[in-house]
Amino acid sequence: MSSGSRITRSSLAAAEEVASLSTRERLLFAQAVYEFGAKQSAWSEIAKLLHKHPLISRPKNFFTTQSCAAIYGYLMKEAGLERTDMCQAKRG
Image (cartoon, rainbow, N blue to C red; front, side):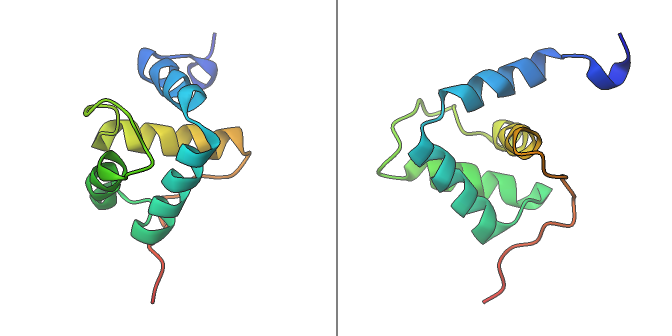
């Protein structure tokens, strides 16, 4: 099996996390990424926002910096979109 198609424990965990997200949670996640950008420095703010959101009822440690980055990567792959590190926050 090549390293490109290798399934790791973290990618399996991200797949399980994404599979458990409701449509509403996916939309709220996408909105948060749109507002803050898909960059390393934004994941902690995104996690904090989602953790405190009144429409989301998840355990305190569900949305973390690492899980948000993994969820984003998985959602982008699932949608057939290329993930770039150049994704920036919405400019007002």
